Amino acid sequence: MGKSSVYNASKQQYPPTFKLFFFFLPISLAITSFLLIFIYIYTTSKLSTDPQSSPFLEPATNYSLFDLIIPGSTDYETIQFSIDNTAEDLFLDLPRTSSYAKQNQWSLGDLFGFTGNTLNNTEIYHDTDVFLEDYKEMNKSFKIFVYPHKPDDPFANVLLPEDYNPEGPYTSELYLRKALFNSHFITKDPNEAHLFYMPFSILHLRHDPRIGPEKLQDFVKDYIFNISHKYPFWNRTGGADHFYTACHSISEIAMDKTVEAKENSIQLVCTSTYFVTGYFPHKDVSLPQIWVKKHDPATLVSSKRNRLAFFAGRVNSPVRAALFKHWVNDTEIFAHFGGLETNDGKEQLRSKFCLHVKGFEINTARVTDALHYGCVPVILANHHDLPFTDILNWKSFSVVVHYMDVPVLRKILQGISFEELSWLQSNVMKVRKHFEWNVPAVDYDAFYMTMYEVWLRKSSVRV
Image (cartoon, rainbow, N blue to C red):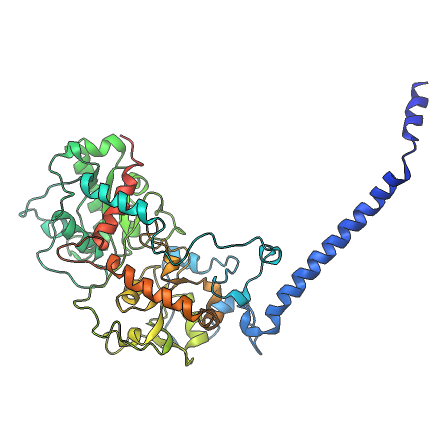
């Protein structure tokens, strides 16, 4: 009897409309899928009709994706790599076309009108009012204790600021230390300090014949051991309220024998890439690499910029190899192999855009050089945590381009309208002051902007 009931229930008759629904449902889904695939193919096929519009295609060539980044044959010197950043160069994620290459963009959001720019890219600050209010509070209350060292210390050259203005591409750490020692942020009472500064110079340690690269890690390890036993402050937080500065790439290994410092302390470094281990953007600070110039260019405002883009440098990374492969003989993009005979800024002054292309490391002084000469920086350095990103809207004064867009670089830059280029250039002139070292320091220059970034991070330290 029970079996018969179950059998009868399974033979229940459904209304015809119910059957039709289940008949047409899979057909409707199939047709919808077909239409979406058709739209996708139709839209993306526009890229393949013009080989120059796609980073993967070129006329009469058959390059693999790997060949796109590393040319099969080249007359350039052997490409050098850093251990960590070689992997970064070869980490080929999906191509991300610049927002300026509008003719090359496509996405389902674009097709159905779901995309939109929620940020006014003409504003150089993320929030001007918040920044100015916080900046005022920082100047009033921020206090830093510097571990003291005497002039007759055997390593005074490493631990104390210079009595001269240093020169060279890695001197940002020296200018910051010099400005900090003479600033109102310093307190001699460690109990009122928000943060503690370890004043050793990684750059001087590297060049000191008593230490050098071989003994650098041991010096840092011994230094932290000494302050942690002489003072109680390191042990309270495991070094989380301590910071140090470094602009040379050797800083990436300086803390290898003091893992606690690398993981906890605030690192102010020029080699600020979140691709490799050891740098944490929420904790560490990107220090601008600035090659200090003695004077502003005389023709900064009046210069006629009749060239599209400029780059000069060695081929010491796959990205630069790709740049030279595609643009070394171009008339619009001036790509010069090696250094220039004179580094007087004439090439930057006659160019609309100046390229910062990742080399052996992610950082160079080309970004700040471009700003110094009033040239709009083009950032070709994936995973670069750019300086002052907590404050500045980089889209308002620079163009960020993905590695994979090197073959369409000219099209991207030419796609920038006159109006867009005008406000990019105008904003470059506005942000220049933030990327300058001054002696003595001046409000809103590189020193005060860096201090603001450090001040923001003090709130994450809990004693």
